[in-house]
Image (cartoon, rainbow, N blue to C red; front, top):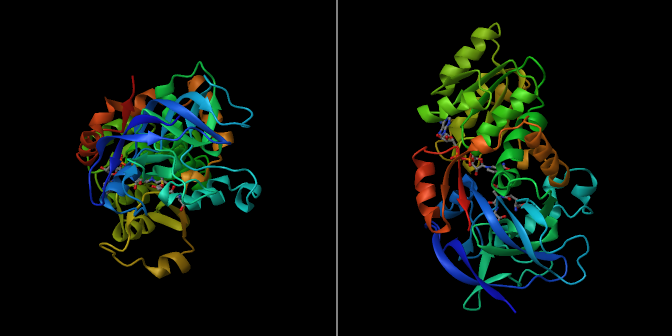
Length: 374
Ligand SMILES: NC(=O)C1=CN([C@@H]2O[C@H](COP(=O)(O)OP(=O)(O)OC[C@H]3O[C@@H](n4cnc5c(N)ncnc54)[C@H](O)[C@@H]3O)[C@@H](O)[C@H]2O)C=CC1
Ligand SMILES: N[C@@H](CCC(=O)N[C@@H](CSC=O)C(=O)NCC(=O)O)C(=O)O
């Protein structure tokens, strides 16, 4: 029997999140239904509302960073039981496509089918409907929901001793930011690193850079609250502009510049990429993690920067993380006191307050806002 559940969805882009009640399918083979405990508020869901990340189906139920408890398991779905605690990974990992087989599970072929949120094996089949009409599921999971049904390729089982509010964050923001530093920027001990944009992603890029042994970690954010918080997550210095940060990096490196600059700005424009490239040394790396509209305000990228200075511009999806390895590993680090998760949560919201939470994001009031369910 399909149940109904409250979700927060957008009906058009540009649009805003609103609460609605939808029908939720029972889990089929290879699926589980989960009662959400908490869901992080990532800027990517705002991109869906603004239209910067266009999706193919409206209404679209948001949320892709959550944790909860399994309430139903599909038939012939071994390894999962009612009562198991799980984290959702915003990218599925099937384990056997060409990219998973190469160890690039963040690029799993199943991810590419998701911009409708339909079932990967049947693009006409939706797990959520409203009066019988399809409702898109963000990243195939939709964690702005009291209950959701998703593929087991998108869930990772975790220990019942781990607080679910903290666990929710390792479904997107923590591995994306951490991995942008540790995997994509490949930071070495002693490095000079700039992180542009201190939200849920940038704060974790700071944590990753610190763990990788960077000596100088420079946070850039126009908002004073963000610059203050950056110090909590490992920044050694903080500036309001990339120009100030780049000047400071050059002053420490014989005029060369940072070894790496990680771009985790909420809405990335072309000029941000040019500024980041100008801030690094010869053969340095810019990691582009933020999404947005890079054709807008597109100050040209100096090709000489890339070719003659042999600089690297590296895109990064999910911080090149492997959900089945990195989610449990990050949680072990949290339990050992080596990774800050609770400190990332700066405000809690109800499901009805998602639109307010995104207003707060635009106003720079949070590192990570969190929807908490009863
Ligand atoms: N590549 C990937 O796998 C993923 C990418 N993302 C993207 O990462 C970006 C960051 O996401 P969140 O941390 O959730 O966003 P957020 O909105 O919480 O944080 C962004 C920060 O950028 C700052 N900012 C704005 N303009 C700036 C500038 N010119 N210089 C420096 N800082 C500036 C803002 O004040 C804010 O603190 C978004 O575009 C999001 O869609 C998110 C998840 C995964
Ligand atoms: N499914 C995509 C992979 C890219 C992706 O997941 N994009 C996210 C934003 S990044 C995470 O914060 C997104 O908003 N996706 C919408 C969706 O429903 O998938 C692909 O492989 O193309």
